[in-house]
Image: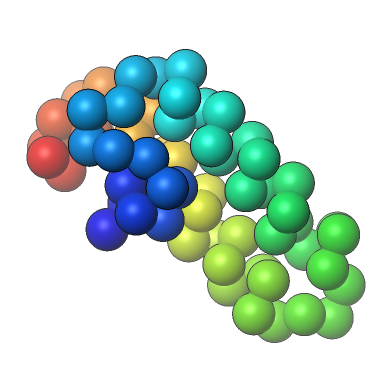
Length: 63
C-alpha cells in the first residue's frame, strides 16, 4: 500500500505526501546507508509510492 509506505492517510494533501517522502528518502537513501541492501530496497519502495501518489492521474487510477 503506497499510503502505508509513506505513512500518510489516503486523503493526504500533496504537501503532506511530499513532506513524508522527503523525510523517508533522507532516512533510507542508499548514500546514507552504503552497503545496506535493505535500505536500498526500502528507498525503492518509497520512491515508487511517491511517483504514483504525487501524480494526480496515477493517484486517481491507484485509488
